[in-house]
Length: 566
Image 1 (cartoon, helix red, strand yellow):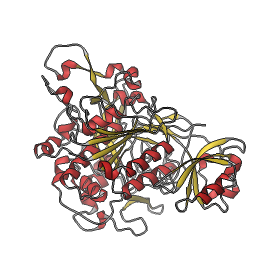
Image 2 (cartoon, helix red, strand yellow):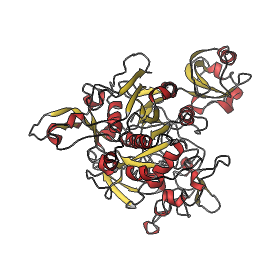
Image 3 (cartoon, helix red, strand yellow):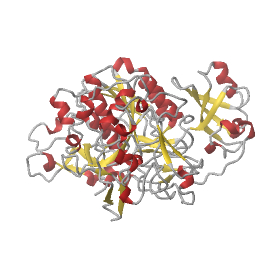
């Protein structure tokens, strides 16, 4: 069986796997591996307690398998192992955990001003020489808005050597982060400039022509980005992709890989996912954050609708943007939100997305001063948290150009502290195809710390040596209360608890955390929390230890990412 990983325009939920006990290895084997028969082989990521030596690798190999790849920054290796070998690799092999090599998918004209990015440009901050690693479906450097700034092209997709973007997702993402609007330089009435038009792009291709990839391909690309960090000044990593959560972030190999990048000094920006409309678990879209966006060290981004205006005050959450808390660990996510609905960016002629959604090509007359009815070969519209994520990656590049000494922790904290926290408590959005209307509320699990404000983040001078872990929420079964715990990881000193400057209310704001008492429910504090009642159908998904898995069940298709909200 093949479990899909999603780009942040798709989502995959696992449902209905049958588990079989494997006593010798039960505590170290991910549950989605437990049903592998003794004679069936599966690609498995095996993690060791320390960097594996040849002897350690060979001990697992001797059980009946093949080493396919050893990773650099995570003490793990990719093996092909039979079910019989899985049942016997625990004892005397230094193995800590094993999980399936899961499948993944990758799911401006108004968005740029709405982020207050033009104020940064007027001060000369354009991300000059900052490297952004785009781990996606490839980036076509031939696009005029990226010409000369794609400095690395490498492929990690099996069966091909091409680094070109056959899917059409990665180039769209790269242009949002760093496009310089060269295509609209002459006779333009509108431009589609990215957030950091002076930044360099490092193209690390992990998704194929259908937008599919695997954990091991992404981990491989992350290893490569870390190795190239000094050569190309890679300070930012953009992951507009994800998959369902199968275990705690402390065991998930994708999460361990992004943490390795964070520890190497790279600010990792990840899409939240597009499961905000999903109610199949009885949670009204809560608990749908994708991996590795569930990791507390990364910046996880949700999507807003900018409503095609340059002002920020009318912007609201996109109904499909995934909501926290994360399943199993109950981490508060997303961290911030940014425009991601109906975003105009790169068109990749001949790509899968262009073929499927030809109607998303932009009319030349929309941005050029002419009456042409022709469509543009340069620009295309997509929606999703995939599109919101590079908005934030670009903002990080601007911050790093201004002050190259900033750490991932301070960058994350400044973005969250300065984010706008004023939203209408309730908003509605309508699917333009089905006509169904969805209602969203602006709580901490939907908008996080708020709407990224590039100019405000650049002007923030607060600093700290502490970590910027996303907080955890705790459910009290005796009172029914849900409380915020921002210093929960082994006593780690986090920025939010440091003083009033970084205090919880400053980072998230009372109205975002506590909600509006007139709305009928109070999130985080009080007994009226949405799933605070153990009789609610979604209670065990959020507050229990049960995760619902499935095989190739889609909970947010690419059509949603193509058409967006209206």
